[in-house]
Each structure stands twice: as C-alpha cells, then as structure tokens.
Length: 139
Image (tube, rainbow, N blue to C red; front, side, top):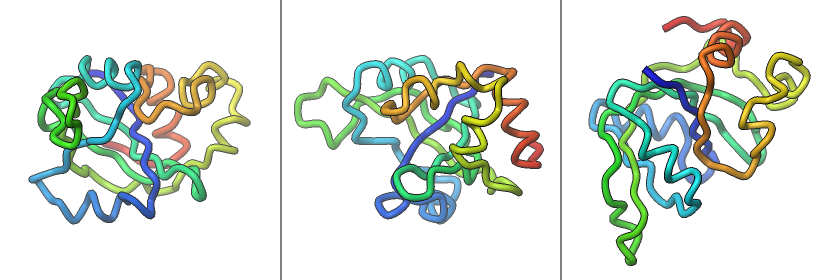
C-alpha cells in the first residue's frame, strides 16, 4: 500500500462533499500538472491518502481511499489527462495545519512543504505515521 495527500480548495470540493459521495466516491478530476498526474498513475486500489483543505484552511482534515485506478478525466477535452476515484474513509480527530507540519523537523522533506503547488503528492511511510500521530487518528 502507498500513501498520498490530495489537496482541494474547500469552497470547490470539501471533505464534507467527499463524505456525502459515500462508497460511490468521486473522481479526482481537473489535475493538469504532469507530476501530479504521474502520482495518480502510480496509485493502486486500496492506497490511502490524506485529504487536505488548501488555500484558506491549509490543514489535513480527512483520510480517503483509492477505489478506482487511473482512468481518463472526462473534464479534459484533449484526452491527455486522467484521474483516480477516491472514497472518504474518516475525518481525522485533530486536523493538522500546514504551520504544524512546517514546524516538525522530521517533515522538512515532505512533498507538501517542498512542492507546495502540487495537488497530489506522495507521502512516505514515516511521514504517514508522523501525520497520523499528529492528527491523533488511527486507521
């Protein structure tokens, strides 16, 4: 299993919206960055990720699971970009802010910090464990 972080502006698509989709899940569409797209191509069913509210909130608020591997994104008229489908697993107990992440030395190399513009980034096992502990959440 691999670990990921999915960023979304809460006024566009929030974790509450994700929860409302239930087991149907939602396609993570609209990603047009090749590196983020390659991250999604590497995902497998059952991989899990943090759901991060970007822009104003800047915090990890939930956990999602990949339910469908990379497939074409119907919002892309060129047919070049794809998406995965994710389902909500649970809210985190204690949301983890970007400020807390940046103030944690063990997370200095975390892709969210190093490549802040990417909407989908990998999370190492060590980073996953640290962030779960910070969020006081278990799977």
